Image (cartoon, rainbow, N blue to C red; front, side):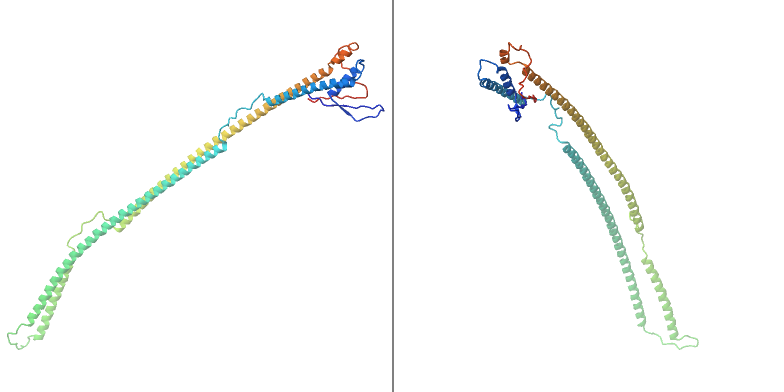
Length: 383
């Protein structure tokens, strides 16, 4: 127990006011003892006796004070709260931001894998389409090469037949011209076996006959040339018909078939592209819905966590306020008890007072009045 020093104002014998003196419970006790023992006839030096007893009392008080402060220090060191914080539910758990970043990273990784798979699928489809186109082009080139080979073989066969026919015609023409030259030469070398006849009246001359003969020969040659040309024309016409190849198409038919197939392929590709775009859109919508569901779930969990945290904080504040009120109540009770104890100590008479005043003052709880030598005592205890 610590007492605040008391202030006393002492007046000198001349009536002058001196500086205020600080009175403590020890000095107060000393004044009380002086007042009690000032009329004791057996003691001449009251001050020396009081100093001796005051020193003994001061030693005891000092020991008690040291014990009290040691006890208070021990109590402060060993004091523990009557309540404890609730166990942290997030102890040894990962931070929310790390978990959220992990979820985001997983979602981004899944989206990247889906995008990579989609790109791979598109590349595979493009590769298959290019392979199919190359295969179609290769097959078409093979068909064209086969058709060109067949056409070339047919042309070679026709050329061989035509060459053979030309050789036959040339051989026949050569024989004819040889026969003609030979006949003309034979006629020219023929000897005349009779004398020329006189030209009778009305008979044609040799020149006229020669001209007539030349004209007849010319007509025969023209007829022979005409027949030869007709024969050449008849020979030049093919005597057989090439078989019709149903597998072979004309250029127009081939172009029509190619255009029809191209239109069909374009329609199929358009339908496939539409279906693929629809599938991609559905996949993206499902992925977006899953992501939004996860985000909503996370937001709900965060909101629930925030509400729980606020509730825990409010509960903690309430508990702290209750603890502070309880602590204030205990402190007030302690101060009151200490004050009552101090009052009881101050009101209790001393043994010396009971010993030297038992004939004059009955042992009561009332303290003697302070000395009226101009000293004003103000007692104030700090708890």
